[in-house]
Image (tube, rainbow, N blue to C red; front, side, top):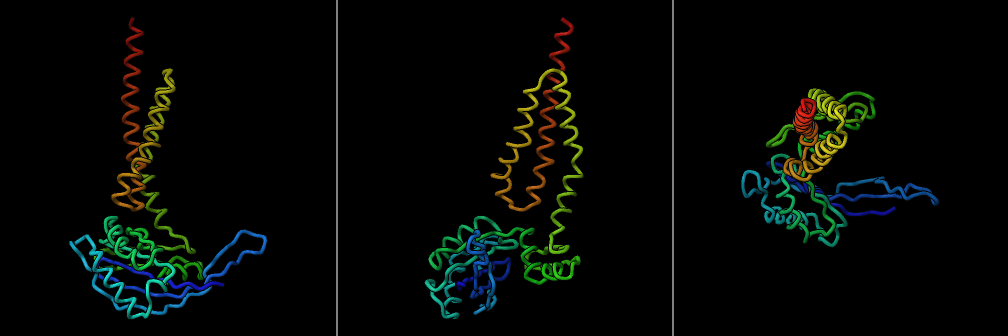
Length: 264
């Protein structure tokens, strides 16, 4: 077994808090199997008071002030940065912006070199709250459906668990995909029509660019601006619409060309 000291920092819309924990890990794999390290025990050593989140603007976190709060918590807990093995910072609510993650990481890097900083949008935030409240464990233990409502300073999020699985994500994806799936059908009909007219390469290239390349570009642009599953899901109907539109133009162009050659 091995013990490590971990610190967690939760930076929300209105409040910020630090927790120091002693985590016990054990390799539960066999001598001749792949190592399988699991957390077998955890103990909260110190929980800081709840601070008001320091802000430079209504949406930007003051990284320097967060650093001072962390230093004060270290002092009261009786630890130094050298004592901490790892740590995580979760930025939630209205403060969940990538600019804030960069500012906080830059300031806290002097406290622990192995800090992980992540911004949690409403989807991830709701799951974290649901697991922290015990709703996830109750759903898994009782084989039932549970719901958790996380009411924060700037956002309110809900998550539903069924036997430990998050069903809200699937329902949201179904709602978006099923509503606009007719666009995918239109796209496929246009592809088949163009191929039927003797042009196979053109619809293939358009489909690759619209259905594949466009979504990759979406992930590196739009998704970076709003890192939520909803933003990821709507890339499907958007790509279907654009691809179907281009296929429609190609179909009309090919049809016009063939009709012209027939007249000659």
